[in-house]
Image 1: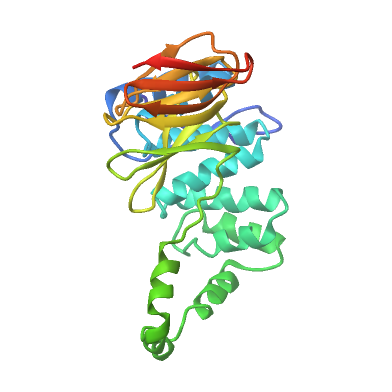
Image 2: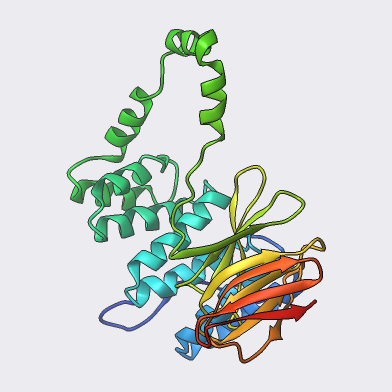
Length: 299
């Protein structure tokens, strides 16, 4: 595996890219092959192919930090700041002490006109981090300091005595409190469409504009389940008892099948603008907006 870690800070005068050391992590071999392919494409300035390879590596191993970082760096270089920010936030979820990614999130938030979010990210960067000097510079441009933001964050924490009092539930509010604890919001899912689940309690969400599928685990973690060129405008999804997921591919005019291990195949081709999907017994039903019809398919 090539231990190259792209940091696409293109120098205006030299046109040179700066490379940083990667995180030491040993992903599956298939993911590493895609990662290395992405590095090779990057070296020849084939950025779309490089990003596709990094996304494929991530779909194989949703915790592949190096692949996320390289993908985010290319998106940042291509001035796709919102998409880049979403990628760096994925790193923060998986590795909160990756302070280079935390700084990237702060910097991109600042560029996108979100100073409050930028300040929040800056407050997460400790003084001993090697990105702390850069964080201080960014904080200065936002007319604050990292120390000030950290202090604000600390003052927002409840004092011990208050925390003890807060831990004593009022009998009449106990059930409501339990209900509120079950509520959650999962952000940064571009154009969410279909939702399905499996017998293990995982929830899958189709992302129409990014051509990908997220997985929300029973413990509340949002992960990238799969990102592949065969997914093209996913609208609706349904799963069977074996854990296979069937997706209506609106932009490709087909229905694909995704196995629990992530293998994708075209199940039904030439369906005009497939939309809703439903399983009843051994049959898959697909609504076709393009032909004003419903298809019945034996699984």
